[in-house]
Length: 439
Image (cartoon, rainbow, N blue to C red; front, side, top):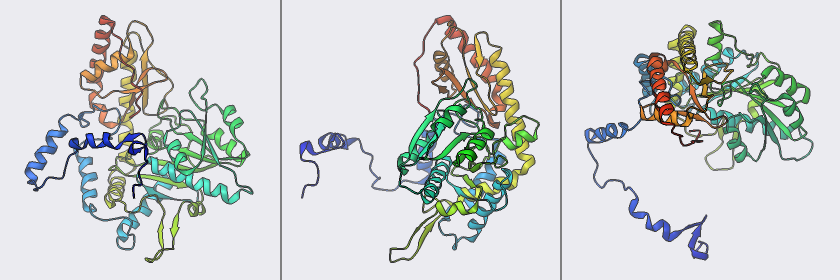
């Protein structure tokens, strides 16, 4: 029986004959296997077109501080390369490391006694689980069936919308005030009986500023809604920056009203990719996160997090790096990161016609042209020609740079290339192409 649509054998607007026309472009599994030497050479050749993250040429994606720390991350991962964290009873060492990572994270973010959390594969999963948990908690408390909604500033990460899309939650984004932090009056006005959660960023990714978490905590308590703090970017940097004497706004469980917090270990925690935590003020909240299924012949299937099989290497790497660096190691990386940012800010602001968008509370800086004499998009393209991967911000048109320790050795080189790019664009009068892609 033909189950395809009768009209033009079409699926989602793609004609089947169109698909067949591209069949010749497909890559097939080789008939005969190749030697590892040959395959490895192919991999090295393919990497030649990638940006050199070791040389600090990327303003995002990779967090690095030399080969010694990289070896710890890689070797720990390799020790658990084949282990599957789904099998906690089979691999009790992984289950133990997961518990310890969560406990260390709870301590770092000043969680009270009785708090709990889970190790996840990244910020997107942590945010997904926060929304899923808050949604089910909301449903359990609601006297009537309504479609829940989450209220957040326009600067909150798109992962919230992604999770809400899958979970059947409405999203309301409110404006930010002149200081680029969430407008509290707009947030308050948007909260109603359907609101299951409000969100604050610590910091937000577009501008690097902290929303007013203390005030959001007061709002959450007065309106009896769940407050989630997204500290995925800066969570494992901010506490150590504060210990180095910098002023960092209150953002964690010291703020009454914060119900959950997400933070990524594979960012400023310097663990291998696939490492984040979702933390809850009360351990009882995790009952709303967990999935359990009994109606199959194998028996009870129960998972705390979204994936089934999970790489044991990511857990081992995160645990190992926390042990290897310790608080003093993280403080050293915090000093290195903030020093690099400060040098970049000074150098950029010394270029005539250039300004750094203020304020930035942690490691992100955003800079733009404040004159019509040169176009910032053309400057970005000129930097790209010089081998730098350039992040962009669309509102306003600006260059976005998320600083970490890997950038410390290349600050002067970057500033030299930036000055030269501005000189070239100023002289030519060229206007660049706008690029609104986030990633």
